[in-house]
Amino acid sequence: MTRPILYHCPDARSLRCMWAVEEAGIDVDLRLLKFPPRAFEPEYRAINPLMTIPAWVEDGRLMTESGAICERIAVDTPLEVRRSESDYWDARNWLHRSDATLTFPLAVMIRYTRVEPEERRLPQAVDDYKAFFGGRARSIETALADGREWLVAGRFTIADIAVGYAAFLATTLGAEDVLGDATRAWLNRCMAREGFNRARERQNG
Image (tube, rainbow, N blue to C red):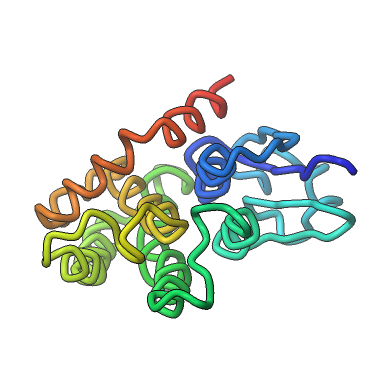
């Protein structure tokens, strides 16, 4: 049985998958690419026609959505919130929210601060989408308001990885000031985990 292959760019959405792999103890064949692949890695199109990161290849199947890949990695590990658990649907909701609701505005900020050439950068769009993210991130603060340590199930799960990546990404874009106190404390717990730090060390060679 061959190892799954993970195509990854440092600190991109695929960091969710790298982090999950490290937490779950899964052995993967890591392929590091330059970001964005569409500009620097033309041969990657043969692997993932979308030219997006991440890509996960296992037993001939290609997966390209970081939330779905995280879900696959979590199966049969403590990261998984099983259907028999009361927080099952809450966990799934966080998985979808992590990308569709929380990472999306940050991706716009990345585009107009890092990806576009200087003459096409839009400070107004960056400010607007930072505020947009801040409004959406209040859902994290609300979830943690009762003093809980992790988002669901009374333990660290794949939901914390998926949403934690979005909060971490915000800090790299100067948007940490829109995160609430409970959210920042939770993010610090996430980022202090050995799995997170191993993932970041591994992506940097």
